[in-house]
Length: 206
Ligand code: GRF
Image 1 (cartoon, rainbow, N blue to C red):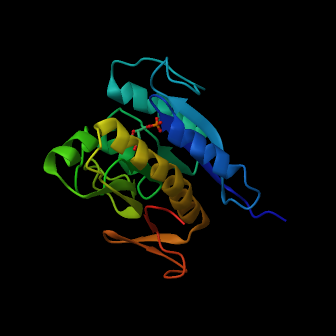
Image 2: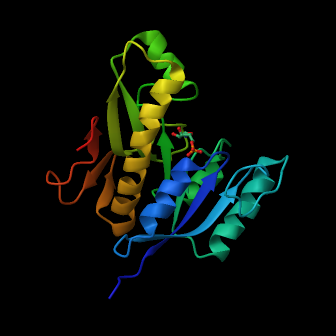
């Protein structure tokens, strides 16, 4: 018999490939989360279930919050959601909202991470799933994946290598948070069951 699954909403703004990886993972019988809602703040976003343009951030978030509560959402996953959230909204979902960022945080917060990594000449880059805190791209880290930076890389080639890993670590991280295995202790997220199940992946994956 299946245990009760955690009810998850995914917020997107565009392509939605991470959203698809979460939806696919959640189809698994033993996956601890179910995706009950996908919301977009952009009318043209793919995979759209709900969209409306709001000029006022607070009005947007009030409607968003009402939708989430209406659907009994317990966890929120930001997946390429390009709208900055207010401290009020972040506080409503403290330790209950995840984001995926295309860099190894705390390096390269913000935008254009692949261009910046190439410009700096780093040899290792990657992706991070973290809890959302009021400061952008700064919450406790749940999972990370590292990839090599190759001499031949363009920003797009590097982004593609990172994205492949994003699609692995986001379902992994959501599973650990939804099942209760991941617990926040200060700035650290401890995963019950480690070290047999580390929350870090190194490319090439096995
Ligand atoms: C991903 O690279 C994610 O890390 C970043 O925005 C991108 C979204 O891509 N936050 P997609 O919409 O999930 O395909």
